[in-house]
Image (cartoon, rainbow, N blue to C red; front, side):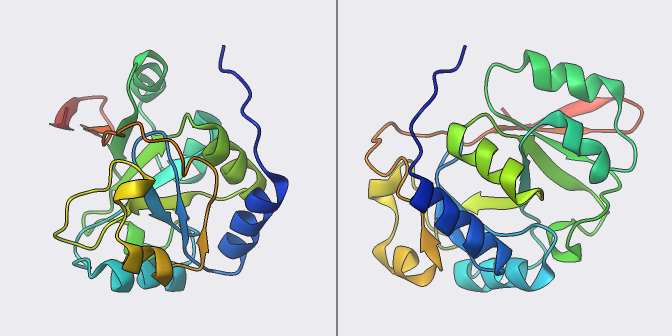
Length: 194
């Protein structure tokens, strides 16, 4: 059973209000620190692309608080998706075909979207309270290595976001990017990154 971690209410509420206002947060996830925003707000998503200097042709991952939310953002979910999420011991991002109800600029040109059901005390609660998915892209400028913990994040990037979450800043554990798997509506899947 996951232990309850004390979350500072003011820190949490600031992050929540920033998301609601269409701002960008810098926050810890179950993998590495990320830049996040409302995944249904194209203007907020655009801000992240511009901040990172990221190629607009590269889509970004979307985080959900639980797998019950999948049906709101994916047309057709193969049954095996739920099994894969349940049995995966490491964070797993699944690329689904036919995304819906998301900002067009988080969806890839082929209509697919990478979604991870997050397992992180701060993220889970934030997404549940926000009631919308959150974009998650590594907290770095495009072309730079991903920061594995808060201490490795570029100070210029920290200064450039609307809110920096305090939770987890002192955790020096080196985070790792998630496994990425592409899942066909037929249930056929392939690993993109293990």
